[in-house]
Image (cartoon, rainbow, N blue to C red; front, side):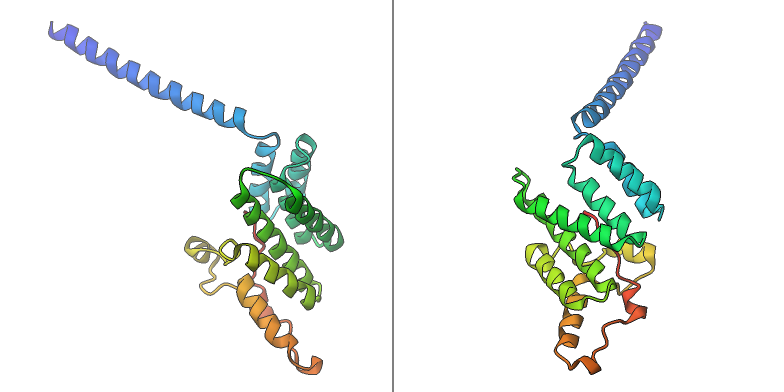
Length: 205
């Protein structure tokens, strides 16, 4: 009887483990089956973007857009990667197209749409800033902050530790700085501060 009890307990444990694995596997299947087309390629692109492999990231975002031309995450990632590779004109066109797409898109996730729109404006502002167009940069920064100030507030504590920027540049700080400088006579303006500007990073929702 004792042996029978041990066998029963072992059977219950095995059955329980199999059930857990089965449900976990089903959850993974449902996750990927329910994901919009292009999601997996976008996740790959995001990883490559974070690793600084911008050309490879563009390839993955292009693959995602081939599968799903309306994938906003792929549009955003591709625009960011284009800017990071110095293809400013293409990046500007990509950000502008993304902004137009998000402004006219109807979705049940309105909060998500506004987050993405704020980030798109912020990133296009960074593009204008780097290209020496402070008035356009300021206009985009202000639009981003008006749409969703929290989304473009700057990196959180983990990012500050990982990237070694305890006092990172943010959209709000940069907008305030540009606004102050643009009030000055042109000869007195200091629009570039490399030691601070270098800490400003692109944003992706």
